[in-house]
Length: 424
Image (cartoon, rainbow, N blue to C red):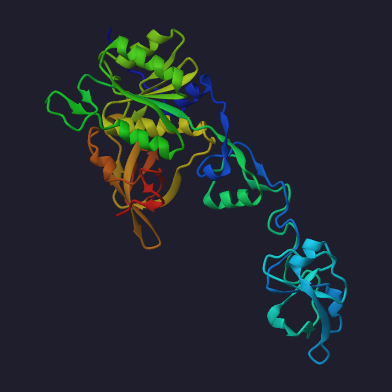
């Protein structure tokens, strides 16, 4: 069976169509707070308590009732008896009387009856007597109840990833667990008789399968997990079985290779064989990677990545990335940087009306960034390794001039690793 196509579907239409036909409900799960770093919260997290939940001192000094020091001055200091330390008061549940004071440390809870703190350097001690040489106002040198976090306040908004400081906040609030979005499960199926998953390639007819590791690590950086990864020969039965397995264990499937124009198209045949209700959009108005496709099979999305690495990456960025993100928070985790092009760029003549992906090398220039276009053949992986950002060029834009400002997208794992920007 020979398949082919001459009509190309715009990227946006293809993505919207398949998104509408596939499951989009976010799955959630419960995780322990100390294991929640980087996870996306599924709903607003609200503080169950005030922080602080009691009025506390933010100085080492003496807790008092402010009214006890009315009229105090350097010429006529107020002298109050030291009634002990704050720990003794709390242990015995005593109330501080007007005209008394107790020692208190930074962060200590004020005893009942106290409403201010005098720093230790602003008082003088003589035995069990404390001399105060100035008046204080109620609440002075104190953290009021709820001044840091008020009960009922949203501390992490739905769709946000948990940061290290958020974990400290959650621990302070006594929240042992939280609900987060389940990690999207992505299956990767590479197809080709020539492909091997080994560094030892002695047969000249064989080629190392080098694309899957790229997408496997990108998926992890985006908050997903690779549910399965396999290489399948160019055989319809083997491919059908692999896709069926992936449909049972994954939320999204990426196929690599086996999609082409005017030749036997293994992936499309496989999807039609699995289900007559499959909705397949094959041939995307995208350069490079026009032989890519996207499909809805059994309510699950399948992204058909071309074999050449640049086309595969383009299809992942424009089709796969949005599908993965909608299963985490629905928000785009890529960052944008405004930069000026160091040189001009022109779309390929045959594909000027397509959506283009322009890879660039970002470099710091003064207070801003300079973006150098990186171009090359679709099979050239050096186009990707020389880049640290990309520009999505709309269909109707045919050229970009030197000095023109563009919006460069940064992708975790591609542009930066562990927070370090890959610019050198």
